[in-house]
Amino acid sequence: MSKLTKFSELKKIPCESSWFEPYRVAEGVTAIYEPHQFQEVISYLIEGNDRALLLDSGLGLGNMKAMVEFLTDKPVTLVNSHSHFDHVGDDWRFPETHLLNLPDYVARLASGDVFQPDAENRSPEALWYDGEPWFDLETWHTKPCKVVPIEEGHVFDLGGRKLRVIATPGHTRDCIMLADDANKLLFTGDTIYPAPMYAYIEGPEMVPVYYSTVIKLAAEFSDYTLLCSHNNPIWEGSVLKEIEDAFGKVLSGEAVGESDPKTEGDNFFYDFGDFGIVLTREAADLYGAKYRPHFHVVGAIIEHEGKILCMQRPAGKQPSTDLKWEFPGGKIEPGETGPQALMRELREEMDFDVTVRNEDFFATVHHVYPEFELTMDTYLCHVADPHFTRKEHVDHCWLAPEEMGKLDWAAADHPIVEQVVQGKAPDHVLEG
Image (cartoon, rainbow, N blue to C red; front, side, top):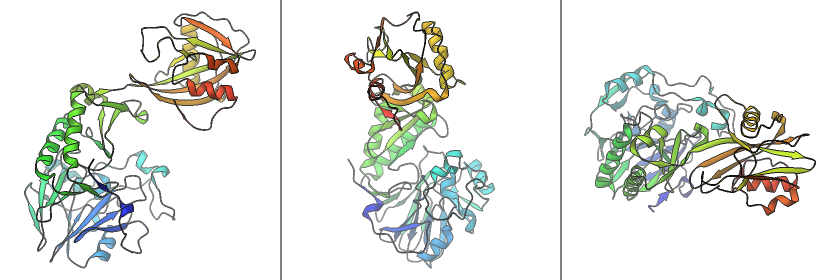
């Protein structure tokens, strides 16, 4: 695995800013890190003898221009690695910026009509700042600026240091990198970084484009040092070949993606250690990538006269759960609450009329089976009449909590059984 150097291993340059953290990462190169928002974006100040170049202006929540003026007294040229909000936020503070010459992207950046912060980025949970904020996340947006189009192959001459523009479509169509060939440094923007790399943002058709870009980069820059724009800064260029291989494994079906519960199972994450690849279900299906589907289900812990209803699954449905014991329940349909889904499932599968209320919630468990992922919300229900019709299950029994451990339970149900035996609901999501 290629070496990744983290900020915790570097010495911070002392400064008065409470928002930015500058670090010297190479001769004449300063990483300007924004650690207080979950994007953890990194901009780069690259100095030559005569001029400096700023790659990206960050989120726009701090004053990037003031930070740059603290770090250098040289005239500064601003260049954007692409036009997402977390890289162009302070463009408006500079006389002009430079962007790859794709007219639609240039026009949108100039007008401020770019990919804006979404609700997740505006949420209080996305802000990790201890002080009193001077900005309003609700009104945070990208402002208009002057944009100068540039072509692939353009060279920025800083005096004793030249930076070559490389078009790297994938994350977006307007992504670029800057190559400092003399010093074997590659400023990667959002095409390559040590975190989940989103290969679907501009549509599933970008996935093979991204892969082709990575193949090109691995062939030319594997002996360079990569300077990345998110999370941690310095990566050995040999990782480019690892990323190329990872894309190959994803698109050949060798790697299996895990679903992201936050997207209701519509995104899949392929984990490769220091980095990952994220595809939508549409893209994964289009290119034959494999993934574990995610199901959000409900389960009923049904109690009658001190005993709990235990149900045995049939064979022939899922190898991981065939003939295992479980709590009855089923999938949550769109628009249903947990209690609504559980009452419907019990009526449909068992002719069992059980009243389930929000306050009956007991615990949530998440489990990854070989064939699928499961998030199960369980509810503790008390019934006076224990009679029902067994339609899909092959057996059932009523057991006292201390007897439940003798059954061969489905793996996702195990943690719930343990909590029932202990007689208390947990205060966190359980992992099966």
